[in-house]
Length: 227
Image (cartoon, rainbow, N blue to C red; front, side, top):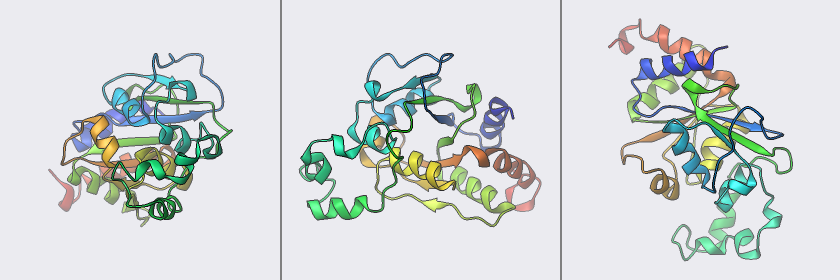
């Protein structure tokens, strides 16, 4: 399967302004891809890939506590008590109190730590690997068409993401569930990525990409989706 071609088709069919990002978890550091040069947040890594960079990152290059935890690079038990409790989020205005943080975390998805050592990021149309998840930053109409394409031949509905960080909601969730996931991103990621106010996010499990792109092509021949 040629993911470069699928990436180009996705851009063409949806007229995307932002290049979809291919993400892959790896049990070891890849030999044919350059390592990220400095620390950055998980969401900033996505922005780098949208802007054309291809690289891999390990725990040493992850600047964000959430990015390390939700992506499976570090166990929550390794963090200090104020992180484990979520107390540090209260003065920042993310939650009113610790119980609210704890209740929210029950609905968040993370990848089990201790399995993967590296994460690879690349523009989908340049990816030299089979992606686990493809993240798109799009407008609402483009996101709607992805959801229709997902349901077109399967009747399957996507799942909506809430206020969890996108390393959880838009990366770990589609990875762990195998389902198309849509959402608005969280306040920190939207600031760090510098995306437009009108933008939304959609993530596609890599295993579903070919089917969805094929459906988009066929849907373009139908009345409601002709341009």
